[in-house]
Amino acid sequence: YLQSIMCAVVIDIQGYQSVDHTFIVKELAIVDFNDIEKHWIFKPPSYGNPDSSPNRWVYRNLHGIGWEAGDVDYSEFNGTLKTATVNYIYLFAKGDEKCKFLG
Image 1: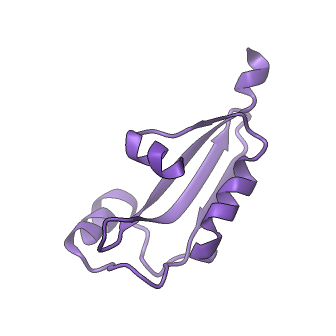
Image 2 (image 1 turned 90 degrees about the vertical axis):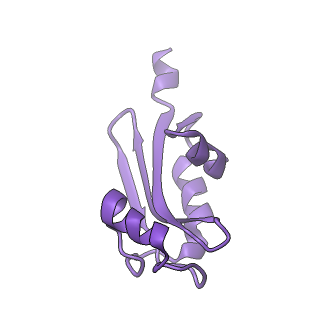
């Protein structure tokens, strides 16, 4: 049992919605049960509307991450997630939408 706990990681993502309601990840954070933390902020993709009313609300009230913030190209999100989680057996995220997005 203890060995399987050490093979687990908690993943959180924060971001915005595009016009077609696709989720746009701005932040990826990973913490395992040994307190190893990993964190990335992604540059904005070429699509999306940071000035939409829902996105302004998210910025002001949830995460405060600016649309232009980021140091990792957005196109690298899937590879970053895969590389960061490849050694874990169990992946946890809070909420049905995040779990579905992380698939």
